[in-house]
Image 1 (tube, rainbow, N blue to C red):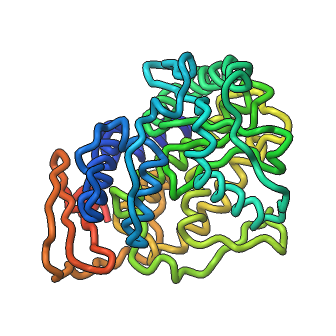
Image 2 (image 1 turned 135 degrees about the horizontal axis):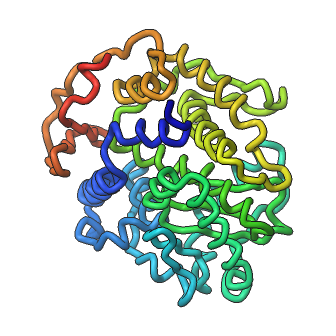
Length: 357
C-alpha cells in the first residue's frame, strides 16, 4: 500500500506534472493581463511568477482597477538569499523594497489573524542581515522536508515562488501563512528550528498547489460558495466557520501534514503534526458529504485519495453562450475567455474525469 505522501503525489499527478500545472497557471495570468489591457501579457515568466504581480492582476481582473507595473522576483531577493534545494530555487524576500512590495499580502495575513482574535499590530517583513542570520535554518528546514517526503516536497517547491520572514516578536499567533490572493508566497515568522520550516513548507506549500489547481482545474463547482459553512471540532465556538473552499484546502493540507508526520520527523513545539491524521480524517468526511459543491476534477481528486466517491455526483454545467474574446493554448489544454463582467475563463482539456465518475 502506498504511503500517504505517495498517494497525495499520485492524486496531484492526475492533473499533470508540476511543470504542466505551472505552465497552465502562467497562461492564465497572461490571459488576465490581456483582459485588463496590461503590458504584463508579454512579461517574462519571472515577473508572472511573482506573487505581488499575480495579486495585482487578480485584483485588476475582479475590480477593474489598474494592474500596475511588473516586478521581477529578483527585485525582492537580495544577493545570496536565493539558493537551490533539490534542484529548485528557494528565494527569501530580503531587499529593502520587499516590505513595501509585500504589504498587500501581509495585510491579508493580518486580516486573517484578526478574524481569529489576534488584534495586535500584525507581522512585519524583515530583510537584510536579519534574513541572512536565519537563512541557514530556512535552508536546513527545506532540506529536512525533502529528506522526509522527497517526492512530495519536490512537488511543492515547484509552486513556491517566495518566502517572506516576519519579525517573530510581532507575529502574534502566526505559525505560517499563505495568501490566496498572492499565490506562490509563504509567510513565516523568523524560524528557531529546521522542523518549523519543514512543516511550514509542507503545510503552506500544499496550499500553493491548491491555489494553482484552483485556477487551472475544476476543483470546485459553480455555486460552491452556497455550501453550508463548517466549523471543525477543534475550532473555538467563536471562530468563524469555514466556507467549502477553505474546508477542501484544509483537508488537502492536513493530509500532507499527516504524510510528514508519518515520516517520523521530530515536530517543533506547537506543531500540528501530532493532530494532522485525526484532523485530515474529520475534514475528509466533511468533503465526502459535499459532492454537489465539487467540480469534476475535485470529485476525481477526492475519490482517488480517499478511495470513496463524494456524494452526490458532480453536476455538469451548461456551456456558456457568451461571445469568445480570446483563446489561449497551454499544451493540450485550452483557456477560452468569454464576454462577461468580469469575463469568464473556461478551461477545456482531454477528459480525465469522465471515465472515472
